[in-house]
Length: 414
Image 1 (cartoon, rainbow, N blue to C red):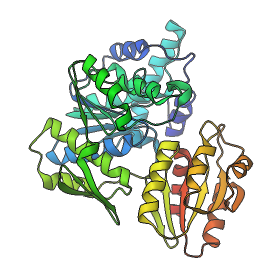
Image 2: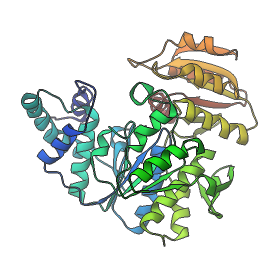
Image 3: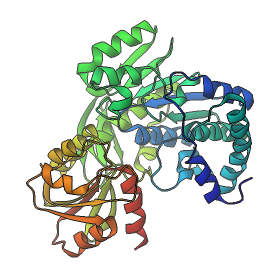
């Protein structure tokens, strides 16, 4: 029996799978044993980057139609509660503890009976499904954790599939080529459904063949997006209609267009005013987020080549001044590749670290660039130094979502 939320998290984070997942039998068994019912529609969102932003946009539009909209995302930036939402409300600590106590007893019995363990992500998903059942939601926007085909979320019957894009990340699990990675993500496409995507045209033959094999429909929104401009909003046209979103970055125009198409799949008469209002008033932390104006500090959770490319492309087109970069990345990420791309906009680096078992040797970062660089182990000291030495440059903090969540808290609490 858990008595504090910290006890819950200590337990959840220590529940690790005993072997590589080869099927979805465990999560299917748990759902049935816990008598979890799914009596609502599901939009399933996969992709290398942009899943959380796109899912949040879809949720924000749908809730303006007076729908009870569940949102399941991973990972979080602010708090664990962020993973499980209904409309604009995060699951509370008390609710987490309620479901965690049920799942604790179930998991301990499961270990004894099956000689197996229900790991962290599956426990979190089960918690979410129990919560959504009890709150009687109308529709769930559900983000994949990793990949698609063997992701724990993929055991449910879904109504619409979204794949935002395909890039290089999690190669140990998903493969070393884009077609291999794409194949995992395409695993969320079931028979007789629709897939909405903004995938690169080079992968369209593979996407088309796969979707056709499922007797499903494919919608690629890329050619329908135009006139992208970023100032205090990201302005764009989708199918020649003007929209804007307060999530900054050119790539957000594509995420928003996917969201528009997804909403119209369920309601083709969704009023323009509701869509534009929802997109203009979204809160989604850690994505091109301005956390200080004096000096100007932007944080972005880009943590792979695809996301860093998008970030650099957007800043290159929409910011003319010097950019000092505070960078940290976990050891299983392509730090060299990310730094090579950031070199295009970097005036100076502050390389730093966080307290994590997967932290990098930050002195290695110095080997990846010829740009003026400083190494400071403690990320708080790195931020303070960058601010103290600032002479009107933009400060960009990026490289890891975990890093960004810590940085955001530190800056906003100062």
